[in-house]
Length: 327
Image (cartoon, rainbow, N blue to C red; front, side, top):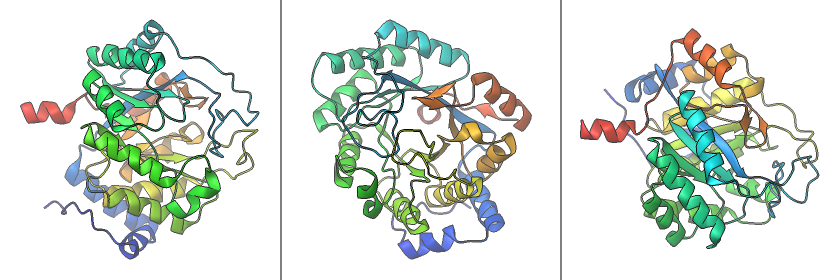
């Protein structure tokens, strides 16, 4: 029997789940994961930085912020043909979702946005789920993206509302939530998660999971990122995130949001195959693949194929839920 999907979790309930002895937590999460998802498949996504660097925001973890000297070169918006070529390569390597990221504070109604709309149409025509992460969006802009065929929009909360201002001062937590509302209203799938290792407490992690799991609709995709500390950013000296912290976050997210794609995201390049296998067992069923994750290192397509072969994992097909409804 499936557990009932809930949107009324309390902080105390989440705290109790999060603090469950680790092996018991993994078992519980794996059991729920098996009830709601095909545990033999993982969604394979590729993330391409279509406009790199020069961002006016001050996100303390980000090498693309203009105010930090991180060695990231500023690149203007890529050409559509270049992007579609990259998408075709990703599809051939097994990716079924293609995400385009632009280092913008917010979307502006200009020629660059028109070009992104064209890219969305092009990737959509290739039969891939197309995703964007472009910063803050108005309702009208979200609708334009939806009309062009955008499948998902990524806009992470990063951390708890209370700790957020320690990491970013150039926009508010409510700005983030407003963008997510606009994405929902346009009928676009929501991709929203956070980052572990920003200097936050366990209480902050629990509060972030509370915000996500008590949304009127759970995000369809929940990325759990481990901080990749980059020289030149304020968090350059932060300690590497322990794999058990990632497992604990993934398992808790899986229990709270049974149907979501829980994505093992940034930080995967320093994880062994056995570390990643534990994350899959705890409920992760989505990864980013390809040599770069925006500007930070990521395992290659070939490494991931070898891992999938070893673990007996197959890539989830594109538009699976829609196909099942039609079928």
